[in-house]
Image (cartoon, rainbow, N blue to C red; front, side, top):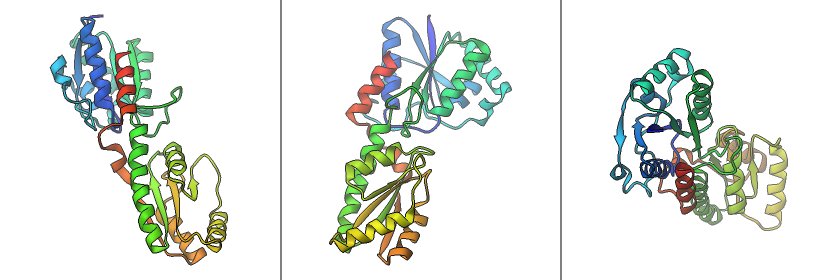
Amino acid sequence: MNSIGVLTSGGDAPGMNAAVRGVVRAALGRGVEVFGFRHGWRGVISGEGVWMESGTVSGILDRGGTQLHTARCPEFRERVGREQAMENVKELGLEGLVVIGGDGSLTGARKLYEEFKFPVVGVPGSIDNDIAGTDYSIGFDTANNTALDAIDKIRDTAYSHDRVFVIEVMGRANGFIAVEVALASGAEAVLVPEVPFSLINICDRLKRQRAKGKRSSIIVVAEGAARAADVADFVSKNTGYETRYLVLGHMQRGGSPTAFDRVLALRLGAF
């Protein structure tokens, strides 16, 4: 194999740059050229990108986001889009692709292989940690630490004002981030899509804790389980406690990757 392509696709995740670095440095060390597609599958369809050198990935190990940029690409879901992508790949003389992304991106990679028998390697990069066959995906640890830092700060103000805080974290239809940060922060309750829950039972628990002298509480909600605003409204009406909510949102995707994510990404990219 003389040349390959690499792309980052779908939602960005801290550590994607480290993965790209791992791919490029490992490939060049074996005498394999690397073409970096910009804006994910959209770049493969348009042919937008650049031939990468060792210096291209210098100084990006600690940077969040993705140097190659990323984007959603509805066109790739259609056969005609994938045909155009393959045409560009062949014109560039590429003999394989490394796709760094989440569930949707890797599903697209699988289709490309199944339809054209073109060699594709998928690298799991998603803060949601919802990719089958993986224990940890790139970005999950950093997202957990970002959310945990925010919750630790919120607990201080919740304690000061005797308030209940409902904090919504990302994760799409999965509760991996919510469970991790709830455990790490000592939250009083956590709501995830995978487990049925009763808000009435949670309110009863808060009342029992308040009766024992606990004046503030944290409830962590996975975005796929419920809206933080709705949960806060329900808790306030059914307990009478002053309740606030916070949606952490896209801040969980940003920031410098943790040591764990950097090493994981480098290993997966180089492998």
